[in-house]
Image 1 (tube, helix red, strand yellow):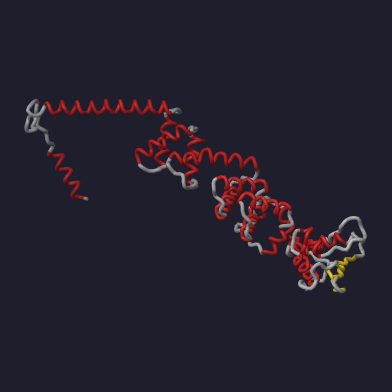
Image 2 (cartoon, rainbow, N blue to C red):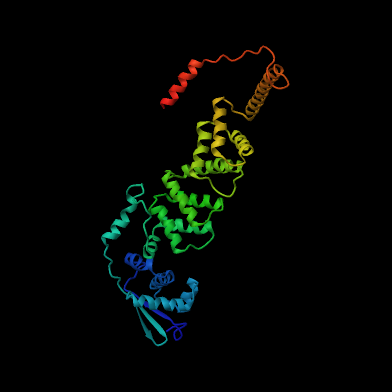
Length: 362
C-alpha cells in the first residue's frame, strides 16, 4: 500500500456537519491513550478535514501539516482500519475514507475504583509501592497532573524518561500522595545537589512523605534547613561526599533546636572533636556542645575564655601537686627512707586475725 499510493488524494466523508471537530470520548478512552500517538494525531486531523467539503487533501499535505512522514499517514489509516473505526477503499489512485461509529466502552468496576483513588484519604493506603502496567501508565497520562509531572521531570533531569521511571514518578502522586508542586520541588532539590538517579529521588520522596512534607512551604523550610544546616555541619567534619543519616540528623537537630547553638559554635565543637579524636564523632561533639549549654556559653569567644580558664586552673593544680611531691621528697633521705619525725605504724593484730577468719569462712 505504501509504495503504490504516495501522493494519493484522500476523499473523506462523514455524516457529521459541524463548524468544529468532535472527537468521541470513547476514542480517547479506549484507543488514543493506549495507541501510537502519531496515529492518534493523524486520526484527529483527518476527522478535522471532514469539515473541508471543497478541499480534498493529499496524503503528502497531511504529512506536511503534522510534520511527519507520508508513510506514517498511510500506516495510521491502515491501523485504524484494522481497529474497525475507520473504513478505507481504494478508488483508482485515491483513497476513500469513512469514519465509523466507535463501540461504547463499558466502565468496569476496576476502573471506577481506580478513578476514585484520589478523592479519598491523603494518607498512603499501601505499605508497599503498587505495580503499574504499561497500559495503566498510558491511561494515567490522560490526567493533567500526571503529564505535568512527567514533562517537568524530563525538563529538570534533561532526558526522556523510561517506562520504569514514569512508574516511579507516578507512584509519588498515586501511592505517596505527594501534591504535584511538592514533586516538582523534590525534582528541583535532587537536581540541585547533583542527585538525578531515580533510586535516590525515590528514597527522598518516601522520606518526605513519612515526614509529612506535603506542601510547598514545608518543602522550602526543610530543604533550606538541609542545605544550610545539615550539609554545612557535615562539611565542618570534613564530609562532602554524602548526605547525613538519620542518627546524624537527630544530633544536628538537638544542637540547633534544643541547645540553641549557632553554626559558628557547632563549627568550633566539630574542630575540637577532629583535633582530639581524629574522627567525625557526633557523640563527642555533642558532649562539648551540651557542656557549653550547661555553662551558658553561647559564643566562640566565651568558649575560648572557658578553655583558657580551664588550662590555667589545670596548671595551678599541677603546680600544687608538684609542690606537695617536692615537700615529701625533702622529708626523705637519699635512700628514700624517712629520717625525720618517723613514727612506726601501729598494727592491730587482733583486727587482722578477725579479718583472716572472715576470709576463711567465704
